[in-house]
Amino acid sequence: MHERERHRIILSAIQEKPVITVQDIAELTEASEATIRRDIAALHVQGKLRRVRGGAEAIHPPQLGNLAARPFRVSESVNIDKKRAIARAAVEICDEGDSIIINGGTTTFQMVHFMAARRLQVMTNSFAIAEHLIKHSKCTVNVPGGAIYRDQSLILSPFENDAIRNFYGRRMFIGAQGISALGVMEPDALVIQSEQRLMRQADELIVMVDSTKFTRRSSMILCPLENVSTIITDDGVPEEAVAMVEAAGIKLLTVKPVASPHKEESPSVA
Image (tube, rainbow, N blue to C red; front, top):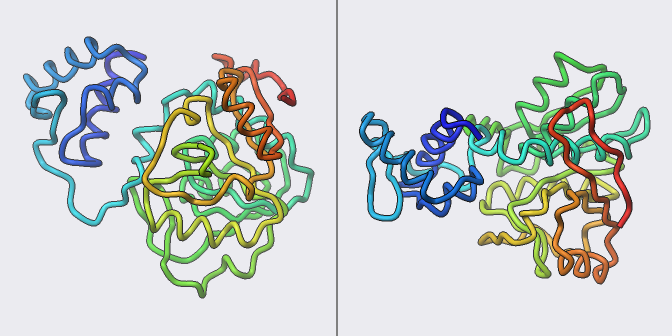
C-alpha cells in the first residue's frame, strides 16, 4: 500500500475514536509498525493529527453518537483483491431474477461490479450499493427507510414499520467484523438491530469475509454460527477455522484472490 493511501486510512481511522494505536493502524494497512510510526510522525509534523504514546489522536475528536462500525472509506481498499474475489463468487451463486438482500459493507459492496448485466431484485441498507446499482445495473433496487449514516454509507432505522418487512429474499449476503465459535460478530448495536431485521426476511444467510476475520473479535454477536448456511472466504483461511466451520455444518467456499479484477478465479468448495 502506498504512503498516500496509508495516510488517508490513518486520518479516517482517527475519526472513529479519540485515540488509535499503532497496532490498530498496522492491522488496517498491513504495514509494519515501524512504517506506521513514521507515517504518524509525518502527519504530526503536517499538523493533521497529534502523535501520542503508542499511537495517534485526532486534532478535532469525533463527535459523540457516531456508529462504532468502521467508516466505509477506511475499510474500502483494505484487502481489496480478496474482497473482489469473494464478491464475484457471491454473485455467481445467484440465479437470474433472484430476490436477494445485501447488507452494507465494503466486501458486499464489491458485488456491484459483477451485477451490471444481471436482473436481480435487491434490498439493501447500503446507500453506496443502492446508488451504484441504480446507475450501473438492470437490477430492481429497494431500500429501507431511516437515516443515512454518511461515514458507513448505511441507511438505518430503529423502527419496525418500513419496507424491510414487505421484502422476501432467497439469500442475504453480509460481511462481518469477526467470526468465532460463538458466532458472527459486529461492533455496533444499531447495525446489529438492522441486520437482524433483514435476516428475518431471507431463507439463507451467506457470510462474506476475508480470512483475517477468523482471528478477529468484536464486542457483540450478531447471530450464532448455526444461522449461517454458507461462508465465502479466501484461500488463506486457517485450518482451525475450516474445522470450526465444517463442525458447524456450514458450507465453505474458498476463492483465490488476484490483483486484477479481470482475473478472478471461480470458487472451490472446501
